[in-house]
Length: 318
Figure 1 (cartoon, helix red, strand yellow):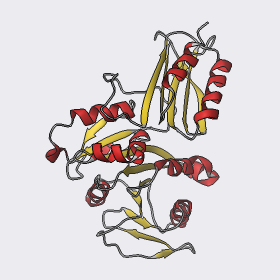
Figure 2: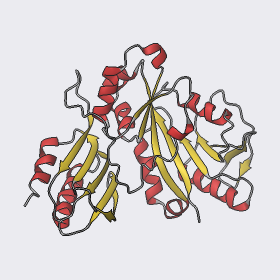
Figure 3: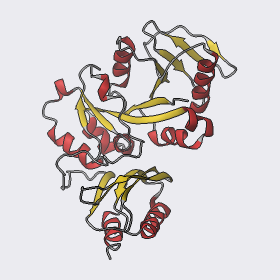
Figure 4: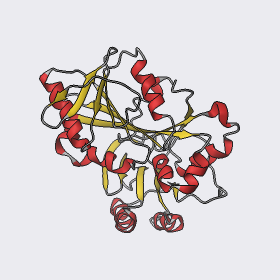
Protein backbone atom coordinates (compact mmCIF):
# COMPACT_ATOMS: atom_id res chain seq x y z
CA UNK A 1 0.00 0.00 0.00
CA UNK A 2 1.43 3.40 -1.01
CA UNK A 3 1.79 5.75 1.94
CA UNK A 4 0.31 9.25 1.90
CA UNK A 5 3.03 11.93 1.89
CA UNK A 6 2.60 14.56 4.63
CA UNK A 7 3.98 18.11 4.59
CA UNK A 8 3.86 20.14 7.80
CA UNK A 9 3.66 23.94 7.52
CA UNK A 10 4.89 25.79 10.58
CA UNK A 11 5.92 29.34 11.36
CA UNK A 12 5.22 32.12 13.85
CA UNK A 13 2.11 34.30 13.82
CA UNK A 14 1.91 36.39 10.65
CA UNK A 15 4.65 34.52 8.80
CA UNK A 16 2.38 33.88 5.80
CA UNK A 17 1.26 30.27 6.24
CA UNK A 18 -2.35 30.95 5.30
CA UNK A 19 -1.28 33.02 2.28
CA UNK A 20 0.87 30.11 1.10
CA UNK A 21 -1.95 27.67 1.77
CA UNK A 22 -4.36 29.78 -0.29
CA UNK A 23 -1.88 29.74 -3.14
CA UNK A 24 -1.72 25.95 -2.96
CA UNK A 25 -5.51 25.63 -2.81
CA UNK A 26 -5.99 27.99 -5.77
CA UNK A 27 -3.25 26.50 -7.92
CA UNK A 28 -4.18 24.03 -10.66
CA UNK A 29 -1.26 21.83 -9.69
CA UNK A 30 -2.64 18.43 -10.55
CA UNK A 31 -1.85 17.02 -7.10
CA UNK A 32 -4.52 15.30 -5.02
CA UNK A 33 -3.99 17.16 -1.76
CA UNK A 34 -5.82 17.06 1.55
CA UNK A 35 -5.35 19.92 4.00
CA UNK A 36 -5.77 19.92 7.77
CA UNK A 37 -6.09 23.52 8.86
CA UNK A 38 -7.16 24.84 12.23
CA UNK A 39 -7.34 28.55 11.42
CA UNK A 40 -9.35 29.02 8.28
CA UNK A 41 -10.11 32.65 9.09
CA UNK A 42 -11.48 34.24 5.93
CA UNK A 43 -11.26 31.02 3.95
CA UNK A 44 -14.88 30.04 3.50
CA UNK A 45 -15.72 26.40 2.91
CA UNK A 46 -18.92 24.44 3.04
CA UNK A 47 -18.84 21.63 5.53
CA UNK A 48 -19.99 18.08 5.82
CA UNK A 49 -19.67 15.85 8.81
CA UNK A 50 -17.76 12.59 8.50
CA UNK A 51 -17.99 9.80 11.06
CA UNK A 52 -18.77 10.47 14.68
CA UNK A 53 -15.79 12.68 15.42
CA UNK A 54 -17.30 15.82 13.82
CA UNK A 55 -14.41 16.45 11.48
CA UNK A 56 -15.38 18.86 8.72
CA UNK A 57 -14.20 17.77 5.26
CA UNK A 58 -14.87 19.53 1.97
CA UNK A 59 -13.59 18.79 -1.53
CA UNK A 60 -12.72 21.98 -3.43
CA UNK A 61 -13.03 22.63 -7.15
CA UNK A 62 -9.36 21.96 -7.85
CA UNK A 63 -9.46 18.58 -6.13
CA UNK A 64 -8.01 19.70 -2.80
CA UNK A 65 -9.70 18.50 0.36
CA UNK A 66 -10.04 20.76 3.40
CA UNK A 67 -10.39 19.25 6.84
CA UNK A 68 -10.89 21.41 9.93
CA UNK A 69 -10.82 19.98 13.42
CA UNK A 70 -10.79 21.49 16.88
CA UNK A 71 -9.99 18.22 18.63
CA UNK A 72 -7.07 15.80 18.41
CA UNK A 73 -4.91 15.63 15.32
CA UNK A 74 -4.99 11.83 15.43
CA UNK A 75 -8.76 11.85 15.02
CA UNK A 76 -8.58 14.14 12.00
CA UNK A 77 -5.95 11.95 10.37
CA UNK A 78 -7.99 8.82 10.99
CA UNK A 79 -11.15 10.52 9.69
CA UNK A 80 -9.41 11.32 6.42
CA UNK A 81 -8.28 7.71 6.11
CA UNK A 82 -11.82 6.46 6.79
CA UNK A 83 -13.30 8.74 4.11
CA UNK A 84 -10.56 7.78 1.64
CA UNK A 85 -11.03 4.05 2.25
CA UNK A 86 -14.78 4.37 1.71
CA UNK A 87 -14.15 6.13 -1.58
CA UNK A 88 -15.79 9.38 -0.44
CA UNK A 89 -12.63 11.37 -1.12
CA UNK A 90 -9.37 10.79 -2.97
CA UNK A 91 -5.98 12.23 -2.11
CA UNK A 92 -2.35 11.15 -2.13
CA UNK A 93 -0.80 14.11 -0.28
CA UNK A 94 -1.62 15.85 2.98
CA UNK A 95 -0.65 19.32 4.18
CA UNK A 96 -1.03 20.24 7.85
CA UNK A 97 -0.92 23.93 8.77
CA UNK A 98 0.11 24.49 12.38
CA UNK A 99 -1.19 27.43 14.35
CA UNK A 100 1.33 30.23 14.79
CA UNK A 101 1.96 29.38 18.44
CA UNK A 102 2.22 25.60 17.95
CA UNK A 103 5.31 23.55 18.72
CA UNK A 104 5.86 21.21 15.74
CA UNK A 105 7.44 18.53 17.95
CA UNK A 106 4.30 16.75 19.21
CA UNK A 107 2.78 16.88 15.71
CA UNK A 108 5.88 15.26 14.21
CA UNK A 109 5.91 12.58 16.88
CA UNK A 110 2.29 11.69 16.10
CA UNK A 111 3.50 10.09 12.87
CA UNK A 112 6.01 7.93 14.74
CA UNK A 113 3.96 6.84 17.74
CA UNK A 114 0.59 5.75 16.30
CA UNK A 115 0.58 2.31 14.68
CA UNK A 116 -2.01 3.01 11.96
CA UNK A 117 -0.69 6.48 11.17
CA UNK A 118 2.86 5.13 10.85
CA UNK A 119 1.64 2.57 8.35
CA UNK A 120 -0.60 4.80 6.24
CA UNK A 121 1.18 8.18 6.30
CA UNK A 122 4.78 9.11 5.47
CA UNK A 123 6.06 12.38 6.95
CA UNK A 124 7.79 14.03 4.00
CA UNK A 125 9.07 17.20 5.63
CA UNK A 126 8.59 20.26 7.80
CA UNK A 127 8.40 23.63 6.03
CA UNK A 128 8.95 26.67 8.26
CA UNK A 129 7.84 30.13 7.12
CA UNK A 130 9.82 33.06 8.53
CA UNK A 131 8.65 36.69 8.44
CA UNK A 132 11.69 38.65 7.23
CA UNK A 133 10.31 41.88 8.76
CA UNK A 134 9.55 40.67 12.29
CA UNK A 135 11.52 37.43 12.73
CA UNK A 136 14.46 38.94 14.64
CA UNK A 137 12.22 40.42 17.34
CA UNK A 138 10.05 37.29 17.44
CA UNK A 139 13.02 34.97 17.90
CA UNK A 140 14.51 37.27 20.53
CA UNK A 141 11.28 37.20 22.51
CA UNK A 142 9.97 33.67 21.88
CA UNK A 143 12.06 30.50 21.91
CA UNK A 144 9.10 28.88 20.14
CA UNK A 145 9.85 30.94 17.02
CA UNK A 146 13.38 29.49 17.01
CA UNK A 147 12.03 26.01 17.66
CA UNK A 148 9.82 26.17 14.57
CA UNK A 149 12.93 26.94 12.51
CA UNK A 150 14.87 24.19 14.24
CA UNK A 151 12.43 21.48 13.16
CA UNK A 152 12.44 22.60 9.52
CA UNK A 153 13.67 20.70 6.50
CA UNK A 154 13.22 23.83 4.40
CA UNK A 155 12.86 27.47 5.41
CA UNK A 156 10.70 29.90 3.42
CA UNK A 157 11.59 33.55 3.95
CA UNK A 158 8.54 35.78 3.42
CA UNK A 159 8.04 39.56 3.08
CA UNK A 160 11.54 40.06 1.66
CA UNK A 161 10.08 42.61 -0.75
CA UNK A 162 9.55 45.02 2.17
CA UNK A 163 12.20 43.84 4.63
CA UNK A 164 15.35 45.30 3.12
CA UNK A 165 18.65 43.49 3.68
CA UNK A 166 18.05 39.98 5.06
CA UNK A 167 21.66 38.74 5.24
CA UNK A 168 21.90 39.00 9.03
CA UNK A 169 18.64 37.09 9.43
CA UNK A 170 19.74 34.42 6.97
CA UNK A 171 22.94 33.91 8.94
CA UNK A 172 21.00 33.57 12.17
CA UNK A 173 18.63 31.03 10.60
CA UNK A 174 21.63 29.06 9.34
CA UNK A 175 23.06 28.97 12.85
CA UNK A 176 19.77 27.71 14.27
CA UNK A 177 19.36 25.06 11.58
CA UNK A 178 22.43 24.14 9.52
CA UNK A 179 20.66 21.52 7.43
CA UNK A 180 17.68 23.44 6.02
CA UNK A 181 18.08 25.41 2.77
CA UNK A 182 16.45 28.86 2.70
CA UNK A 183 14.09 29.85 -0.13
CA UNK A 184 12.33 33.16 -0.77
CA UNK A 185 8.55 33.21 -1.22
CA UNK A 186 6.59 36.32 -2.26
CA UNK A 187 2.86 36.61 -1.58
CA UNK A 188 2.63 32.84 -1.18
CA UNK A 189 3.88 32.11 -4.68
CA UNK A 190 6.53 29.41 -4.92
CA UNK A 191 7.25 26.38 -7.05
CA UNK A 192 5.52 23.53 -5.24
CA UNK A 193 8.51 21.33 -6.01
CA UNK A 194 10.30 23.31 -3.31
CA UNK A 195 7.69 22.13 -0.78
CA UNK A 196 7.24 18.50 -1.69
CA UNK A 197 9.54 15.46 -1.75
CA UNK A 198 12.01 16.92 0.74
CA UNK A 199 12.60 13.41 2.20
CA UNK A 200 13.17 15.13 5.52
CA UNK A 201 12.32 12.04 7.55
CA UNK A 202 13.82 9.47 5.23
CA UNK A 203 17.09 7.78 6.07
CA UNK A 204 19.31 9.37 3.41
CA UNK A 205 22.87 10.58 3.00
CA UNK A 206 22.21 14.30 2.52
CA UNK A 207 22.64 15.18 6.18
CA UNK A 208 23.38 18.86 5.58
CA UNK A 209 23.16 21.10 2.54
CA UNK A 210 26.45 21.87 0.76
CA UNK A 211 26.80 25.52 1.73
CA UNK A 212 29.17 27.75 3.73
CA UNK A 213 29.37 27.19 7.47
CA UNK A 214 28.71 30.03 9.86
CA UNK A 215 30.91 30.06 12.95
CA UNK A 216 30.00 33.21 14.85
CA UNK A 217 27.87 34.53 17.67
CA UNK A 218 24.85 36.64 16.78
CA UNK A 219 24.11 39.75 18.83
CA UNK A 220 21.66 37.77 20.93
CA UNK A 221 22.57 34.15 21.46
CA UNK A 222 20.02 31.71 20.11
CA UNK A 223 18.42 29.41 22.65
CA UNK A 224 18.21 26.93 19.78
CA UNK A 225 21.18 26.19 17.56
CA UNK A 226 22.61 23.43 15.39
CA UNK A 227 25.84 21.53 15.86
CA UNK A 228 27.55 19.82 12.94
CA UNK A 229 30.01 17.07 13.90
CA UNK A 230 32.31 15.59 11.24
CA UNK A 231 34.71 12.69 11.81
CA UNK A 232 37.43 11.43 9.47
CA UNK A 233 37.99 8.18 11.38
CA UNK A 234 35.88 5.02 11.87
CA UNK A 235 33.89 4.56 15.06
CA UNK A 236 32.68 1.48 16.88
CA UNK A 237 28.93 1.07 16.70
CA UNK A 238 28.61 0.18 20.40
CA UNK A 239 30.60 3.29 21.35
CA UNK A 240 28.33 5.46 19.21
CA UNK A 241 25.28 3.89 20.85
CA UNK A 242 26.69 4.72 24.27
CA UNK A 243 27.32 8.35 23.33
CA UNK A 244 23.83 8.72 21.86
CA UNK A 245 22.18 7.07 24.86
CA UNK A 246 23.94 9.47 27.21
CA UNK A 247 22.96 12.43 25.05
CA UNK A 248 19.31 11.37 24.99
CA UNK A 249 19.36 10.63 28.70
CA UNK A 250 20.48 14.16 29.52
CA UNK A 251 18.98 16.24 26.72
CA UNK A 252 16.15 14.33 24.99
CA UNK A 253 13.58 17.02 25.77
CA UNK A 254 15.87 19.72 24.39
CA UNK A 255 17.08 17.79 21.34
CA UNK A 256 14.63 18.72 18.60
CA UNK A 257 16.04 16.86 15.61
CA UNK A 258 19.21 14.99 14.73
CA UNK A 259 20.46 13.20 11.67
CA UNK A 260 23.68 11.51 10.65
CA UNK A 261 25.73 9.30 8.36
CA UNK A 262 28.37 7.20 10.13
CA UNK A 263 31.56 5.41 9.15
CA UNK A 264 31.40 2.26 11.28
CA UNK A 265 34.63 0.40 11.91
CA UNK A 266 34.85 -2.88 9.97
CA UNK A 267 31.63 -2.28 8.00
CA UNK A 268 31.63 -1.68 4.22
CA UNK A 269 28.29 0.20 4.28
CA UNK A 270 27.44 3.59 5.72
CA UNK A 271 25.01 3.72 8.66
CA UNK A 272 22.22 6.31 8.49
CA UNK A 273 20.27 7.50 11.52
CA UNK A 274 17.78 10.22 12.43
CA UNK A 275 15.54 11.12 15.31
CA UNK A 276 13.09 13.54 16.91
CA UNK A 277 13.64 13.92 20.64
CA UNK A 278 13.51 10.35 22.06
CA UNK A 279 12.27 8.69 18.86
CA UNK A 280 14.97 7.60 16.42
CA UNK A 281 15.78 5.01 13.76
CA UNK A 282 18.87 3.72 11.97
CA UNK A 283 19.65 1.44 9.04
CA UNK A 284 22.49 0.36 6.79
CA UNK A 285 22.81 2.11 3.45
CA UNK A 286 24.91 1.55 0.32
CA UNK A 287 28.66 0.73 0.41
CA UNK A 288 31.23 3.51 0.47
CA UNK A 289 32.73 2.31 -2.80
CA UNK A 290 35.41 4.71 -4.01
CA UNK A 291 34.14 7.57 -1.84
CA UNK A 292 36.38 8.32 1.17
CA UNK A 293 34.46 7.13 4.24
CA UNK A 294 33.57 9.77 6.83
CA UNK A 295 30.93 10.63 9.41
CA UNK A 296 28.65 13.69 9.38
CA UNK A 297 26.08 14.39 12.08
CA UNK A 298 23.87 17.38 12.82
CA UNK A 299 22.11 18.05 16.12
CA UNK A 300 19.48 20.79 16.57
CA UNK A 301 18.32 21.61 20.06
CA UNK A 302 17.88 23.98 22.99
CA UNK A 303 21.09 25.08 24.73
CA UNK A 304 22.97 21.97 23.65
CA UNK A 305 26.38 21.47 25.30
CA UNK A 306 28.44 21.79 22.12
CA UNK A 307 31.85 21.26 23.76
CA UNK A 308 30.65 18.12 25.56
CA UNK A 309 29.10 16.65 22.40
CA UNK A 310 32.21 17.27 20.32
CA UNK A 311 34.45 15.87 23.05
CA UNK A 312 32.32 12.73 23.36
CA UNK A 313 32.63 11.93 19.66
CA UNK A 314 36.29 12.92 19.55
CA UNK A 315 36.86 10.38 22.31
CA UNK A 316 35.72 7.59 19.96
CA UNK A 317 38.90 7.86 17.89
CA UNK A 318 41.05 4.81 18.35
